[in-house]
Image (cartoon, rainbow, N blue to C red; front, side, top):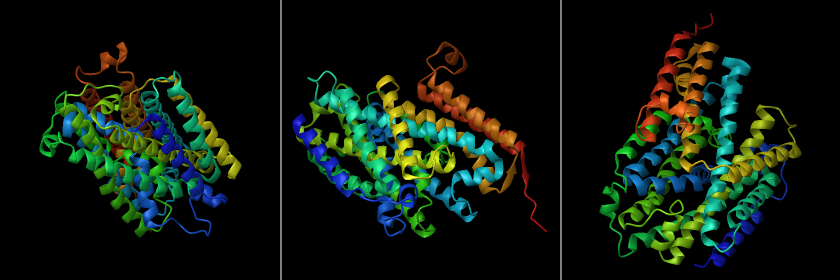
Length: 459
């Protein structure tokens, strides 16, 4: 599959997305995802939207890269993060049972502006990371397939950012939901074809893939699995895309959507990770975040199918991140009027910031996940003690837990700096991340439990 054909197919998919996107949208549809007739999204729409916004390009690449270096342990470690659909569904159910309409509602009722400000800071960083990390993958793909064009990476990032912004700003959350169905359908067809072709290829051995230890051994993959286990309770709560979709439909439909999204996304992540594992088994050199590796491993049409699936998943995340950003800034922060134009202005600003970070920054793909995941860990003790155990938590406890998580996130991000290295134990970066996560949880739980008290029932 030639570069020109890949570009043509991708442009055709974008055209189809523009045709599927709603022509007219109300304010409720833009921010709340309602259809033109005022109905909530269906179960199928919610499931496909949840999955396609979580198996985005960055996640697929991470699963494959971890599989290459750490074998099946690495891929399973990343798949463990998708247990977030189970923990996220549990948190949403408890919030709704208590009458909250969002995470911010619950935090505001217990901690006031302090609670929502800390939380909104974390999810704003999360949304920015979703934008720039997916645009990074877009740049990697086009620089690999169009090496003769000097600015292929930069031009593709700008073009995809503009195209994603165009239909997202037109329809908001309603456009994201409708196009997610198309994007996920295209992704599944293209990816299943590529996956079956790999399974049937002469050099593929399923047993070897399932027991592979990667080029660097499986140990650090299991360490990352432990990190995922510590982060999986708080991780979904700091993802506004998932949380937004937890309050769109009735409770029964929402619960079923989280359960179906869990198994479907785990299957996709593990299957994509096997492409990375296969690369390690055949002795392929690691090149261009595996994109260059796959180019030399697979027939051109399989390589092209992989790239198209990555590009489609990148687009699906961009529109959802932008719609969640507009809801955050308009409905939660109140920094723009609750109007179509107000939401669109927010989208433009977020996309500009995300594209700027992509063109300027050089963070690795997993760092974006690890940093935001660590920053979210203050929510674990707060939710377990406050939401599950129904205890009242002092504001100082909340602030201590939040500060510990933010310090941990900064420490991991700056681990190469002399001052950070002096504070961290020697070892692989995942071992350091595990130590940070344990410390953050210990500080958070001690502070929250120290400041917790039983809520006396009203007489």
